[in-house]
Image 1 (cartoon, helix red, strand yellow):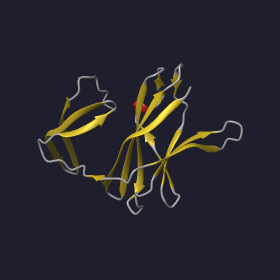
Image 2 (tube, rainbow, N blue to C red):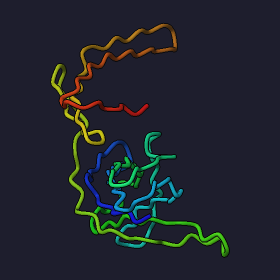
Image 3 (tube, rainbow, N blue to C red):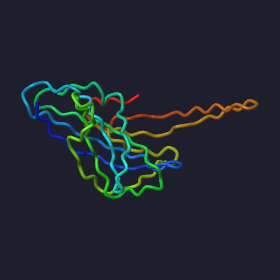
Image 4 (cartoon, rainbow, N blue to C red):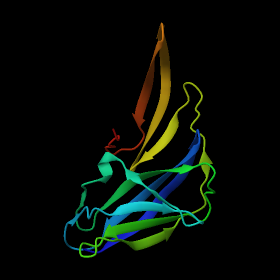
Length: 171
């Protein structure tokens, strides 16, 4: 079944010693049969040739795409902060069953990463794209309980669907 792939979203977030690279990969089934998850591996390849595996959220595995329909896979990779995020490529890799080798079946050039801050002011909404929808999220409160050598942090979030369609929130 022929499938058309397109990077619909690309961003990076810095936290600690790592850059977290997020890719939204839209797959469109342009064939006439059901397309089932072929167990392709996704890798970010840097300009110096290093490869970093991407992990998919739970809604991006064991998927099925009906003919003429599409699905966005949400992928994330952890790259050391010392690596420059220019000239990155997304590689789609499939294991060859006879030789047991991982072979790249497609490579896509990614745009230069725009580093986004994860810091948000209290009671200010942050908009997040999820699949074909968008949600607004804000931290509405936090409580810290301390007892001897333990700390329990509780954070309350408000989620608001800003589109007219159902949005699945990843676990």
